[in-house]
Each structure stands twice: as structure tokens, then as C-alpha cells.
Amino acid sequence: MDLTRLSATDIAAKIDAGEISCEAVTRALLDRIAEREPLVDAWEYLDPDKALTNARAIDATPSKGLIHGVPIGVKDIIDTKDMPTRHGSPIHKDNQPCTDAPCVTLVRGAGGLTLGKTVTSEFAAQHAGKTKNPHNPAHSPAGSSSGSAAAVTDFMVPVAFGTQTGGSIVRPGAFCGCIGYKPSYGDYNPLGVHDNTRSVDTLGMMSRTMEDQALLRAVLTGDSYRPIQTAAIGDLRIGLCRTPNWHLADEATQACLEGAARDLSAAGATVGDFNLPDGFDTVMEGFDAVSSYEFSRTLSYELINYPELLSDKLGKDRMPDAVKVTASQYQAGLAALRDYRNRYAADLEAWDVLITPSAPGEAPADITTIGEPPFNRIWTGLYGPAINLPVFTGPQGLPIGLQVIGHLGQDDRFLDAADAVYRAMR
Image (cartoon, rainbow, N blue to C red; front, side, top):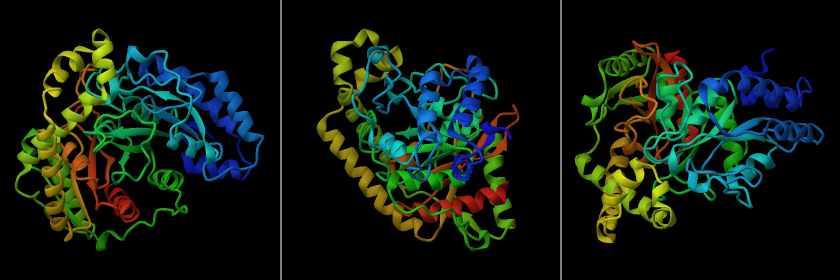
């Protein structure tokens, strides 16, 4: 049995049955990391001895919950009381929080092992971290949840936390080739997660299986565990949403999305075109105003005290304009987003889920970029759940993802439908 290939759900079940131990799984993962980390660079902080000590402690205690003994990666903008939280910045290289973020507390309270901290882009923004794409190290893993996506894809850990402001869960999932789930806004408590744009920031999870998303969802929401109940594909109404940015998708991505629509229709789903409401450009301008205003104020400490330690992409390219956004422009942006959400929700009532690109194309051959979010920001701003499904391979042999979008606040139903789409496409 290759323990690195097990899902979180499998690990939990086998530990509960006494077939394997947390220590054995952790050793296997650490061996995998030792082999692959020099190429992939997915980890910001990892203490193998501490991880094994903690694994043995977990094995010595009765089961605490749903994920007893399951190792989990934690994105390095999330506070951990026993590991540094550096936010992808030299400014915080010695930052040691005194408490865990609630999401980490819930994982540990359910018996999970926090294996280490995964690489993030600087403050979850545009300046890339050190991580490379596990399929080809000359290519980008995207961002900002680059380390989490790469580590999960490369069998270094079964699941890992990610966060999304623009497309920082879905796009790394697409570039690296794993499942990246952004829940409905607010479903997972974001306290102890460094803000980027608080009005839209969403905590989520990377995995290799859909069932692991359901398992971790129960841990993080406190709801009873509800295994995925795969919807009947023939019952689904699926909208094909090209978005007004369709021209930014390359030919391979366009062909994959339209091919998916045909395949899902052939599988029995009702598939038709879905167009976003009028005013797309205006609401995206509002999104930019909100993000600029909130992010520049979030980074006040760093901007005022350590401007020389910010990357050029942040300190010179983004922040000078961001700090100029006024409070009235910010409020106008919030109002534009609220109005658009209401109009969009009314239009979505006729559909169960939407399918749309996860990214403009395959991962670019440039590890200094995190990629572009033209197919992500709108969905983050609309608050509903989004997920990347790794179902395609592009002409360069790299993954191309299919993004599925659902109704705000209906994530159980959404995961059931997304699983049906995933199974039909596979």
C-alpha cells in the first residue's frame, strides 16, 4: 500500500480500523517530500521530527473526531501557534503567532495533524513564491495558494488549506491539477487568516477527491458529516457560461469547455447557454476599487514601516494606486457588487450549476507569475461556491480545469452536483 496515495477519507477510515497509523502515514509523506521538495518547493515550514512526535501523540490517544490522524497542509497566511506564519514576506520571517486560527483549531480538535506550512504568494497577492508546478518545474503553479495545490497534487499531503480573493484556490487547482474548492463566502471562519480583501476573502481546501471536501467541510462547519450524495446527471440543469472574458481563454480551453457541454448533454444533463447580467465591466471596476481600498489599508503596517521589504509588484506597481482609492469609491464598489449579486441570483434560479473556465489556459512557462484571474474574480465577488475539477490535459501536457459554480449557501447540493459533473467527465 502506497500511503501517500491515500485520500484523507481513506486515511481516517484505515486508522480507525487499526490498519495503519498516523505515524506511518506521516513517515511516508515526509519521505515523499524529501524526494520531491527540491524540485517542487511547496513548503515554507516543515519540521519532520516535530511532525513525527505529534503523529505518535495522536496515535496514543483515542479518536478525537472525523479526521483523526489525517495530515493537513496549512497555507502560510494562516496562524499556527507552533509554527511561524510568514505571509510570504521577509517582513514576517520571525512571526510566531501565540494562537491557532479557528480553522487550524478545528482540524486539530478533530484529530488532524498539521504537517507544515505551505508556500503562499506575498500576502496572498501577485508576487509569486518559490513553488514550481509539479508537472513541469519550468511552469507556474499559480497563486496565491501555490504550495497547497502543488503539495496535494504531488502526493505530499492529502489535503491542504487555500484561500481565494481573486482566484487563489481555483486557479492553482487548475494549473497543478487538483480539486480546489472555494465554499460560499463566510462558510469557513476566516479569523486568523491574513486579510487581503475582507469583503470577499474565502477560506477553502485543496484535495484529490471530492469526498475529502465533504469530510473537511463537516470539520470546518461543525455540521454532521454528510458524505457526498452524487446527483443524477440527468436531473441537472447546467449553464455554459463563457463570460464576457471568453476571448481571453486560449483555443484549447475554449474547446475543452464547449466539449464538456456536449459531453454533459450526451450524458443526460440539460445544458444551455448562461449569460451574466449586464454591467459586467462596471462590477469588475467595483471589485477592483473594493480590493484596492481594503488591501492597501490591511497592509498599512508594512507600507509605513517596511516599504523597502515589499516586492516591486506590491510596493511599486499596486500600492501607489491602491491607496488613492477613496472611501466614497469604495462604498460605490460595494454597492455595485451587492446590486450585481442580486441580479445574478435571480438569473441563476433556472440552473443548478454553471460551468466556466478555471483559467485562461495551461500553466504558463514562467515561475515568476501566478497567472491571471479573468475567470475567477467575478465568482469570488458573487459569493457562491466554486470548484476546479481536473478533467482535461492541454497541448503542452499540463492540466486544464473545469470550473463549476453553484448557488450561494447551498454547498451540500453544490458538491453533489459537482461530483456528478466530475464523474460524467471522467
